[in-house]
Length: 493
Ligand code: NDP
Image (cartoon, rainbow, N blue to C red; front, side, top):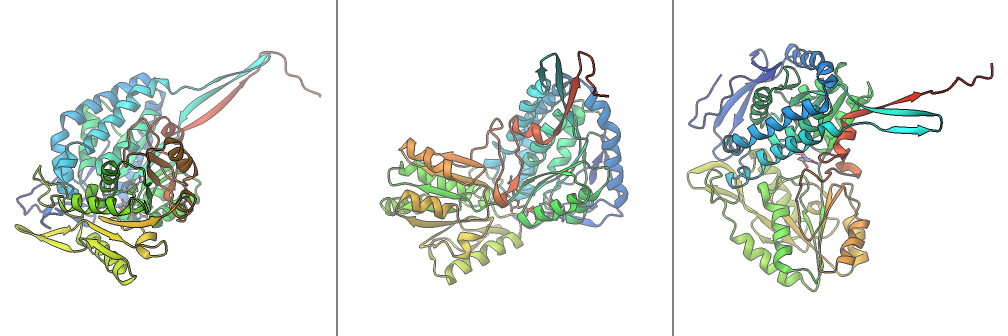
């Protein structure tokens, strides 16, 4: 395998199956690039059909014994994994920064931290996942929460270890086994998670990582020994996964894209509203599914809000993501940067007013990095392409509005429904507005906060099912109802 770079992130081998690193160089090579320099930092091999079978068979063979253990035993292992994730936080942050280009300033405090929180939460509640006793007069019924079986999980590239953990922690807590396929662009941190779970005492076969592109994801979705598929990705991939799973009626959870509204009323605290808009558009270089990219600003505050937004955007430090002072790193790849740039061109040609940024940037010493300026448009109308399609880059659109009723209807005029935000000092209005938002997650006077105890997921075309919190249990378990007769059988025959 090649590792011709000073940024060598080469893993021990491509896959982690049945508790051990596994290689099969018959699979096509996938080069992994550092977004800040374009250099190759690792090369992995796509899973061959034999590797896919090996991983799924390992999961299948390990699952029943795991599900039969008391929840408290499963939870204990997940809690140990949380501890190990925290111990290896800095190492994982550096891997995530090299894999995604996201600033170390973010990855040190978010990625493995969120992963650890997830294992801690589900470790704690594993013992509480029990059924009900339903009195029925002289008889009664019981319910049991049972594992689904083998879960295939497919990840996006923006939060690799977080996405893997948000799926693995509840799945394992419920007694399932998992085969995880990271995005081809970010193959590394899921392997570290597999190492950590093994070290924490997770029996072999319960968490397997295999590499590959969409074809490997599709093979997992179609495999007869897979009982459930959980995807984090784009809407088109969500449709394909759902169609693939439909043939064998597998359960499906989909965490997909968005074009979320962030509504700022005249009475909002301006600095907080600007902070929300910056966090909701430029964090992770704009590569966040729940971003509030349609910023609806009421006419009375628009001028002040826009002035402060531009001032604070101009102060964002773009640069080397490994420098802890850097606030915004490059985009993940040249092609994602070019997609964002082409949307910026569309914005301009459709008549939006480019207020800030809009260009690719050549950083000194990082000339091959995929840097782009944080970009702000105003004068954006509801029908413009930049107001309708997910860009998945640092492009913020300001849309002016006059009143509450109008903004609710415009905010909901989208096929997506992942998130929504509202900034106002009028708490009654805030609740009125979020109640009407067609979105899975809403924030009042903040944006993009996703604590593990709060369910996260989308409505409409942004997906189905929920991750995090107790809501996730429902998607990784099945209810068995058991009727218990205490008297005689009353038969008419
Ligand atoms: P993609 O949909 O391109 O890919 C997601 C994953 O699916 C990747 O691992 C990809 O493999 C795999 N895949 C591709 N085709 C298929 C297929 N036919 N069957 C099964 N798996 C397949 O998304 P991105 O990775 O580009 O991520 C960005 C998208 O993810 C955005 O739309 C974003 O909004 C969304 N997202 C949603 C989140 C949420 O929680 N709602 C969170 C984060 C991102 P490969 O990449 O290797 O080809």
